[in-house]
View 1 (spheres, rainbow, N blue to C red):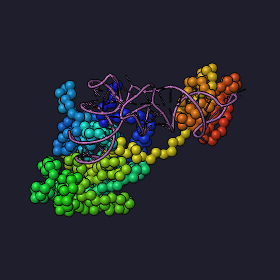
View 2 (view 1 turned 180 degrees about the horizontal axis):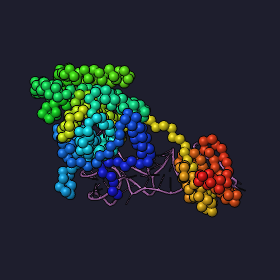
View 3 (view 1 turned 180 degrees about the vertical axis):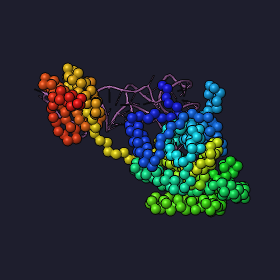
View 4 (view 1 turned 90 degrees about the vertical axis):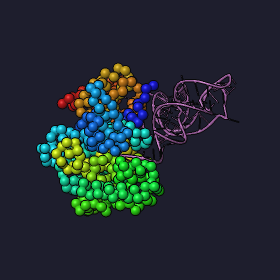
Amino acid sequence: MIQSLRGMNDILSSEYERFEYFLTTASEIAKRYGFHYIETPLLEETALFKRSVGESSDIVGKEMYQFTDKGGNDVCLRPEGTAGVVRAFVQHKLDKKGGIHRFYYHGPMFRYERPQKGRLREFHQFGVESFGVDSVYEDALMIMMVSDTLKALGIGHRLKLNSLGDQNCMPAYREKLVRFIESCEDAICPDCERRKLTNPIRVLDCKNEGCQALYVKAPKLIENLCDGCLSDFDTLKTILDNHAIGYEIDTNLVRGLDYYSKTAFEFVSDDIGSQSAIAGGGRYDRLIEFLDGKSTPAVGFALGIERLLELIVMPEPTRRGYYLGAMDPESIPDILKAAESLRQSEKAVVDYEAKSLKAHLKGADRINARYCAVIGENERKEGTIWIKDLVEKQESTLPLTHLIMKENA
RNA sequence: GUGGAAUUAGCUCAGUCGGUUAGAGCAUCAGGUUGUGGUUCUGAGGGUCGUGGGUUCGAUUCCCAUAUUCCACCCCA
């Protein structure tokens, strides 16, 4: 038996119901906020991710599905969504056009990781990107969108907030931090030693208790922000307070993608195991120029759909449409005719087996139909169809022609 | 990439200290005297015990390999 590749799942009907419900809910909210759908290719030039996500990141360093295509191009399956959207933004010269551009997208992403619950090699993200808005109000808008979406889906969560600083304060802080790390280099773990060189900010995030004990005394990013970053961060907190959105400041919150600056946030759930980050995002004002575009401020977020799926509180399923069945083989043609008419405007599912009324009622129940329509010997002789409303428990028998004419009218 | 656990019916799981026909609940299907469901009762079907090797008279059970899932690390959505 050939099975799907490790960490790559099929989405069957029952699960897809949740998937689709998420998609329609999230898309509807994004549209209400004034965002437009964008679709970009799954396959991109590898250089795109090296330059945006960053070579020091784990994603680019060891998790990409990268290969050479038949034309000799170095390509890879996209590991995240932002880079492709920014590429499209620049390629279509929207940076030069100016103004505000707001996009939302969803689709599969690929990362070659060791799978576990909530971590797949092919997974789906829903994300939004906003270009051309400098104001921290847009950062708040992102957070409000995620909050709205999670609320609409009945998903409990916590919001973690941090500011990563910008080009005025980040480099200075980074140097300060590196000096601090060097001061206690003998005591830190090998991972942190590596991080010191690749991405020193990440040491703050280290899970090693020994390291954490040392880093209590490390310089805090938030205490080293420049005036602009600090005031924006304060404004953001005020906006969230005004909108009654709870948050916790996490000075160790570091995004794993190199392009973030200033606002960084992460929504976490306590109900899904160790892969608890359900949404993450932040500002990335420098990324557009990294990708050869005209400097444009930008913010965005992405949500991991699979991680959300089991948390979604689904609305009560409603009975809908018709189930049609025949009680003897001779009535089957009439059933098909009735179904054909009904389908002009309704869901109509036909059972081709002639069976007892009881069996048909069970069948109607199983597919969650509102009406069970049956033709047996009696109905066939009279040219009628028997219909039971499974919710109101009311039965009626009407002429078959009446039903057909009504639906064709 | 590192360490650990699991894999038996469609699903959730028992079980065999290595020995005839491997069990339960749920689900499915069929019936409960002539055509009334989602809530009852009875019965039936369904498993080369993840896959490939090895040990043995004999392996679902022991050993090895491999795949997948899960947990922790790591990372992130």
